[in-house]
Image 1 (cartoon, rainbow, N blue to C red):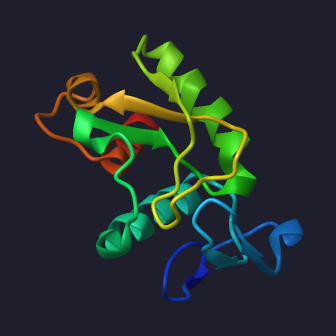
Image 2 (image 1 turned 90 degrees about the horizontal axis):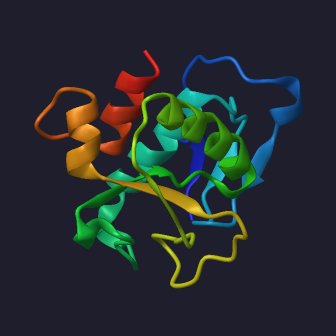
Length: 143
């Protein structure tokens, strides 16, 4: 699919853990990531990368329902970000939904962990905006 650096097309200066040295192919969308930092920046880069390649999506997930994914992470980071983001959403008393996992680049997603989706309108209200993307919302929530 794509070769990336911390889920960006271009290499840049960032810190990554020693155990994450190397290239990893995640099973959700088949993206290869070299030296992932395994942090929120890495996950947000992943979401931005997916959006950048919207022209090859095979699925729109639950977007047509007015929802947006807040946890739809690379397969090897899904559990970590589900725990982190759901804890924050619970602190905010936010309403979110556990949904079957989807792939945007493949017709079938072979993952056991669910994705977490929110209605875009609810997310925007929580951060005091009229419109928000998943990346904008998460950046605001984790300031």
